[in-house]
Image 1 (cartoon, rainbow, N blue to C red):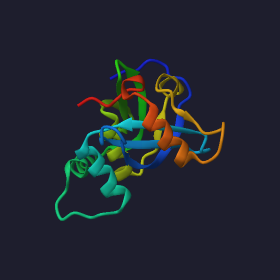
Image 2 (spheres, helix red, strand yellow):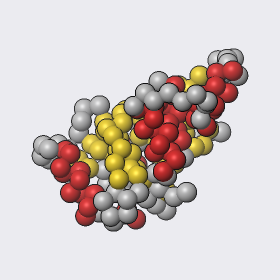
Image 3 (cartoon, rainbow, N blue to C red):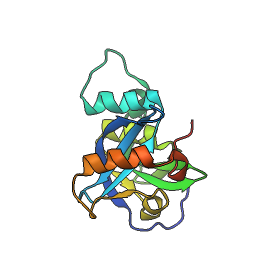
Image 4 (cartoon, one colour):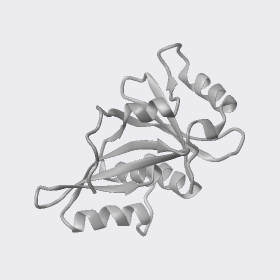
Length: 169
């Protein structure tokens, strides 16, 4: 899949997982490396579980879906280089998984952000978000005041998920 030339992406990390105070839906919260911006993304319960298990280093006796995907990528001689949350359209986030193939080529694969994040965690691949996505999603700007935990909680209680891209299954 070819993608258009892209703006400079912002490297993010997982700040944590939480439940939406009103809907009780899981949210993965991404934070930039300078701790200036938080991006909450509403996700499904199974994807939240897959992310939480990896974050908490919980081993399972048999591979789960994201473990299987990682194994397939590796068995094909490829490597997950990075993931990019590339767009927010009609309240839906979009992501791309960047693979480095054995022949030196690069391939991008369309993905749901939650699946891409779960795979990135298992592959030790960096997570990036385009600035335009942060802008569309009205990401929380932490440079305005300190106490990001309380500020995020208060903001999540007040924001309408439709305003910033509630994750759709």
